[in-house]
Image (cartoon, rainbow, N blue to C red; front, side):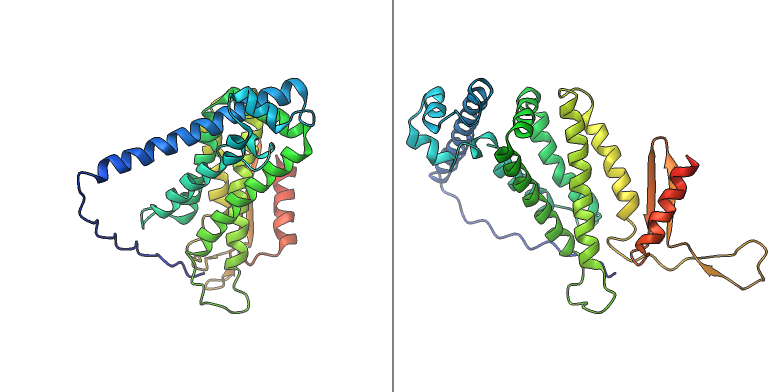
Length: 286
């Protein structure tokens, strides 16, 4: 696996500013803040009505009226009532992408992805009560659950593209598993995040979710960190009782237990059945 350290693009030379630029910039910032405020107010109104009247019985007109705005104002911010329940995903996706774009060149790409998805957790942890109620609603309403799944898929695509961008995409040959590894690793990061998030939400938004997330990411790094970025050099070991100079390849997969968690590390070319046997053996020993 060839890891490509992409050089940061040269910053564009800023144009000369004039006194009129500052008011224009400030106006844009105020407009963005007002837009986000209105989206959140509409989302709050929608959640209140969904909780009291039920999702199906609630109309867009009622949501707008509860928020104190006209119907057309609602549709300036959301295309449908189910979209109103997730007002922050678009902005969070932008922030996550900004983390990836601003990553220092020495940082491991998997670490960058873990930092990027923390923006999603910050969104939920910023309003625990709202997040817990939204979780309850998404479990009860299939339409909302599908919308949430679609949002998660957007993050996963973003992180997969980022990891693929750190491989030599010109290196096309049989046995090159880089694209597979990038997709699996991106999925693992998202899955680890979602596992911790669901556990936190089921606990009513209580607990140190950041510490739980760091622990989950440590497991992902242990599993995939040696494979993403650069293929590790082939290692050998001297088996007990063997003749001098005779070596065998290191095992394709190893697993160890850490409390209630089994951590498995495997070469990218390890057969799946061998990886599964290694994990099963570790579970039996625990």
